[in-house]
Image (cartoon, rainbow, N blue to C red; front, side):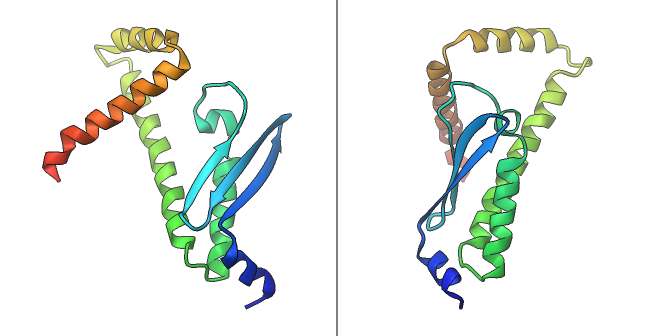
Length: 144
């Protein structure tokens, strides 16, 4: 094992600074617990792909490829996270396509609900999402 590979096994948190189109942010990778976090001080509320493009996904893929090349034990767990994020983005795209399709009889009502939701302050929207996630998990718990 090379010295740099040995050091990588000792690192818990990897911080990658990013400058992209005059926008500065960081990607933090928790190597011990297999987690990716984007640290950004901007006040924009956008989807990750709209705000950051494909760069975070590329960083994840390249990091996973490198970790696999040096047989790092966390590579597979990080790969699963990257795949899950990709699946989540696809689910959102499919849901959007279904909900906004001209054949959807409730399209106008859904669009009005979205407009009303966007009027809610960002902090309140975050709390609504957290409550909704908790309710979903609670409803699904009896089914295993």
